[in-house]
Image 1 (cartoon, rainbow, N blue to C red):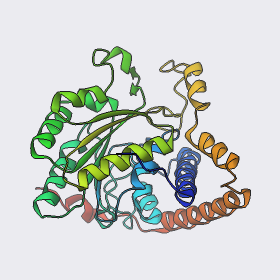
Image 2: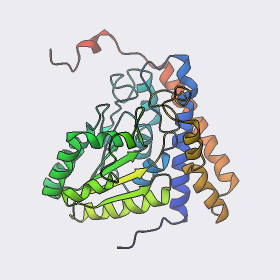
Image 3: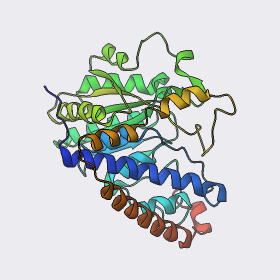
Image 4: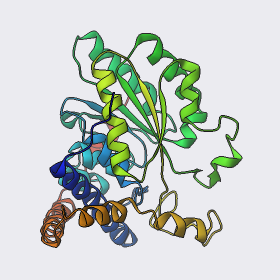
Length: 326
């Protein structure tokens, strides 16, 4: 099957979504030193094309499961920015009532059933959720996002095996940013050749794509979604990308020697937003007035959400004994 190419309106929507995610993440990076956000933040600057390209194909009832680096996925799936930011500030009005923070937002209304900081923790949950949809006779699908480090966990292999066995409508999206915290992938798993190649052992398609090319992400996801909805089973997509900030926090980890400045600089030259923006300008699809209008919207929405988050009431002492076993 020929992969569909996004039309002109979709291309503009993809760029807007990427810009919106980066705007949000950069604002969080600016605010974090104030120390009013008391939860760790794992920023996805540099990886925006994956969230935008994947979620562009998802319907409202489709489900996603994410990781500690979840902000882009949540925004792309439709989470309310006010509830999201209030959660970061640990307020009662947050999407999880202040329980989840940056690493664990949840929004069932928009199909975001869980974000887990446990490496590989969301993978089996996505398989189970997609299986439930299958047993209900619905054509809804589930997508699980995870990093390259998660492919070294047993849950990854068990989930691929079970999903293939039961023909479950789930899509496995590996955001391979080449590092598990500070451990490069070349020191951890050189034998397989690629993460996508691991799918072959379980009898399901495995694709390795440029995760900084939003159209490549869009096309690969279109095939995977179509396959899942038609009952043809799961797909593993490995999207190669690179995060610009350190593993956690708005800091530069090249100064600590975790990654080299030259490597980071080379990936910044492959910025998913600037690449796509230049293409849209060359095709005369993008106007400067478009971006000006978008940024006004981003600034307004974020300012309103920040005011809402800061002025919201914090949880009371009763939260300590709510939703706990004993």
